[in-house]
Amino acid sequence: MDKTELGTWGNAKGSESYLREPKSIDDLRGIVESVGNGGGIARGSGMSYGDQPMNSDGDVIRPLFRKENIENPNSNGIITVPSSLTFAELLERVVPLGWFMPVVPGTSFVTIGGAIAADVHGKNHYRKSSIASHIKSIALMLADGETIRCSKTEEAAIFWATMGGLGLTGIVIEATIQLSRIRSNKVQVSRNSFGNFSDLFEAMKSQVNRFEYGVAWLDLISKNNFGRGILETANHEISNNPHHEFSYIAKPTLPLPNHLADSFLRRSTVKAYNSLRILSAGRTETIKKTELSAFMHPLDKVRNWNRLYGKSGIIQWQIAVPEVSEHTLFDVIDSIQKAKVPAFLAVLKKLGASNQAPLSFPMEGWTLAVDFPANDKRIYGFLDALDQELVKAGGRIYLAKDARLDPELIPKMYPDLDEWKSIRKNIDPDRRWQSDFSRRLNLQ
Image (cartoon, rainbow, N blue to C red; front, side, top):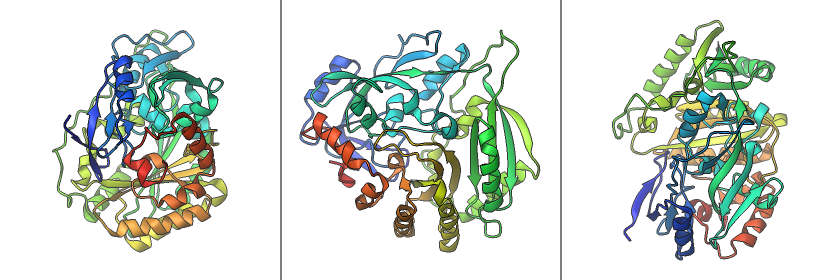
C-alpha cells in the first residue's frame, strides 16, 4: 500500500502515512486489528492546526461511514449520528426542524468525531460549556477492535478521557447528542467597537453574561490603537410565527487560489484590513439580525480561507487563563506589541467552569487565540517565553490547536495528565493509538 501525503488546516506541517478509509464498522474493525508497528490515529476533516491527526509512516484512519440513513432527532431533541458527519451536514438537517447544536466550533466543517477529540467549545462556553456536556453517549472502538458504549454513567472514566483526548483512546464510531430548541435561524447581533483593549475588556466583562453568545475580535497590528477591537454579543431570535420555515446554509461561495504567496499577508495588508473592519463597525452600537451560519461561522463562506496565509501556513496559539490571572491577557498583548511580531488574527472569548475531562482545555476565565505566520522564525522563541509566563499564571495551551509546545510544560498545564495516561494504559497497553502529536509531546 502506497503512502499518502497528508496535511492539516494550518498547512505548517505535513506527513506521509497509510490512509485507511473504512466505510463500515466491520471494515474499521479489520483495519484496527491490522494496525502495524507505526500505530494508528483517527482523522476527521483534517481541520486541526497542528499534527494531531498525523502519523508519519503509520496508519491514519478516516472513517467514511454512510450518512444517508440518519434518523431525525426525537421529540426531546436527541439524535445519534456517525462520527464522520460534519457540523455543516448536521445543522443543514436539524435547523429546519427547529433544533441547533448547543455548542459549535469556529468552523462547521469539523466532524463530530473531531469535535469530541478536541472537546470543542464555542462563543457560549460561559453558558453551555463544551461539547462534552451535550454528548449523551458514544460508541468507541478500542485498540483490540472491541466496541464499547461510554457515557457519563457507563464507562465514565473512558468517556471523559476521550473528551479532549485527541483520538488516543480509540475511534469514535457514533455519538448520541442532546440538541437545543430554536425558534428561528437568525440571531440578534449587537456590535460595538472600542479604541483600546482595556475599554473592550471591561465592556466584555460587564455585558457578555447577559447574552447567549459573546466574542471579541482584536487588532494586534495597529501601532497607535493597539488592542482595539470589536465586541459582538448575540441572542437567538424568537419568531412568533409557528409556521416559519428556516434553513442552514453552510456551503462556501467564495473560492481562493490553491495557495497565495507567503508575502500576500504582511503587516501592511493586515493593517489596512483591520482599519477597514473597525471603520465598517462604526463608532456606535449596531444591532442586526444575522443568519446563524454567518454569525457562527463567518469564514466558512470563503472556501479554504487558510490559503490566505500562503504555502508556509499558520500557527494558532490559543491560551486559557483563569479569572484571577486576567492581567495575563494584558501582558500578552503588550508583549506582542513590543516584539512587533505579526499577529494576523486574534479572538477573545469568555470561558465558564471546566469539566471532568483530564485533557479538556477550557477553565473558568478567558481564552485568547492568535494566528501567526509559521514561516516567521521569531515566533517560536517568542511563544516559548510566553508559554512560561502562562504556566506561572495558571493557564494552559489548547492542545487541539498546538504545533510547537514544549512537552515538559504539559503536566503543569494539565494537572490531571497522569490520570489520563493511566486510563489510556489500561485500554491500550501496547500504544496502538499514536500520532505525530502524541510522540512530539511524549503522550505515549
